[in-house]
Length: 81
Image (cartoon, rainbow, N blue to C red):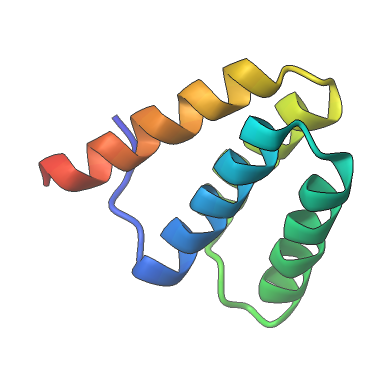
């Protein structure tokens, strides 16, 4: 199970999921840039940074379906709380 995440970070997860679903490197890069900016601004805690990094890593390695599945599981975990 994943930690409970704030709504803004769930939007980032949804962005990664959409990018993975469309298999679009440009979308992945766009989400990655938004995440980098949020990290730089101190908006994302280290444990969430690791989750986002792992998802982006899957996309970078073109494991899009794996990344999308992880995003879906993460979102379902959020609903359970």
